[in-house]
Image (cartoon, rainbow, N blue to C red; front, side, top):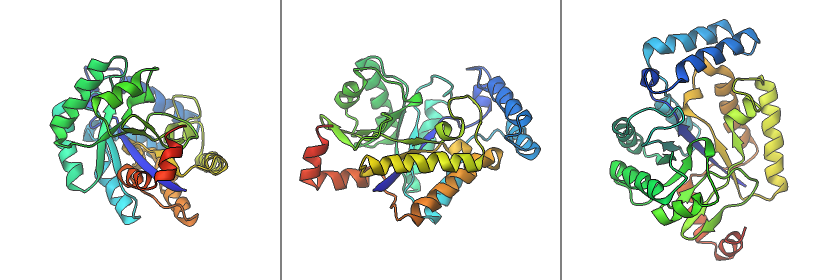
Length: 279
């Protein structure tokens, strides 16, 4: 089994939310709950409040540097349209797409549109325009989808998607590879709430259970989603958890690979390709 680690970029700055959504008051409320329930320290809380003044809500370079130091390929998904608390502009996304590509990282769209083909296609074409890439994938923001979304993605021209949450091997939908993922930071650390409910040790144990489930299901690729926002001392449990997870994978001889590498492997293994084409 190999691991595909990817990162959703939900925020760039704090101030981008001032007039567009309710993320900032929700963030303060969440931080207060976590502080008074003993899940975060006063220092961690102060670091979060300080981020309003520094106006930095992304940790993209820091995460890339860590990944490179551990030989983990960095794969990012960035939004080019707004919705559900994703509020940075397409121009800002275009700048970060360029910067991330200069770091030799893989990047795809963090999708907003999912309900009809024309909107999905428009979003695909905007990302293509901003990135100048001919082959790229996506993951839906909040992993939203309906019974037609995957066919809309494939018809729009996406090369791969990683929206489905399931213990399944990759499979093809027309010309598009679907990479189901199994582990997301929030699901491990929040456990169904909108704030942190698990400490570091609990998060580790939750993760080990999911990895064991992946082995039981004979997965060839373990999908992991970690948001760059949390690679910070403002979210100590999340950051510690991610650093531990990378080390745990390496200790257990689970090699990390990106989507491009996985697709190359799948396309050059015809018997596996044929089997995975029928999930």
